[in-house]
Image (cartoon, rainbow, N blue to C red; front, side):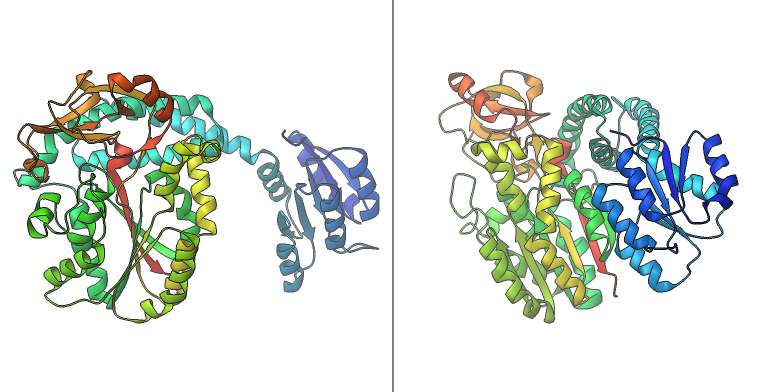
Length: 521
């Protein structure tokens, strides 16, 4: 509920502030006066005010003592200290007590009006501005639907939409959020067609101008940092979406200078393919050829069991020397505690420290099976907020702060994103078809709705190992998840509303890669 446009001005010289009070009243504010702090507390008990203007130096109790009493009455009451005191200690005490603002006399009426307007009407003004800005930008973005965009334009558009998603979620604007979701739905179909036209050409070299892909992360981003400083911390947060990164970025920015680029995950957007590609610099067919003993498909155990060895081999190949690698994977709180004990020694050495954090991936999968998790991460906004809450107390944030203390640059990225799925898509397949919900390999495999999937018949052209003759790949488009006709109702009930990955939505494919440079550098 908004606070009233009323002000209580507490100052033993309040009668000398008549011009200021008249100016505030001319701009729609009601102003009551009190020359004494204890009288002001009685007035606050009798009626509601929007903001208190408080002098520090008054007869009786100091302004800061009155401030504490005001907060005891109403913890959220905005209080502005307006005082002649220029003492540094008074200013520090006021800031430490979380005073809303601090003004040193003499002040002019417009200074007071500016502060009061910000405190009482700032949220409404910002929300109105956000609504205007989005309405204007929405029309511009909507005109791009159906236009042929290059990959750079796609990245710019997808990143902007993710930022709008975060802003509108914070502003609690359901109407504008609905408009954004409608635009996102239509663009997902265009994006799937774009990938179908260009992805194979990026891999076979027939289109030289391509985005950075998973296989390029170490060579294009980690190696320059390693060459410049002799060491780097590579952090891979499994299943981190652009909007989730936007939620934790402000906290990271308190310790690091941030340079953000973006890349495309390889397909399918699933850990066995995408994360192995990051560490090895190899597409899945190349990895299967070079290390058949290590290559595991989604039907096998040990999907990502050799990431350390792959990274060592990759760094050897691109630098021409053996680069020391420390590798840790964090699944549990105990894993995190152990990592933080060993991390100072890791970061003291030259070479690459590589850390994989699995919490967000565990959360997105676990909410499907756990009703409590489903409730606390019911939609994308709740998932973003939960990501921020986790990050603030996570071993990941502790690890980043340790890197900042030791002046070690950090490359932070993810292997794929996820999408909130609501639409079942029926597929027809043989028994040997793979079981994943956003991508499937199999013979005689087809989707009932042709628009529900990107169909890949030439696996080799998509950088994937050959399978039995006649095997094709289906990659889910939009917010669809694959279901079988015989288990239609079961799958719909179980997976509708799940966060899934493996398909070709922008949320799964377009990902952040950030260079974090410690501020103390």
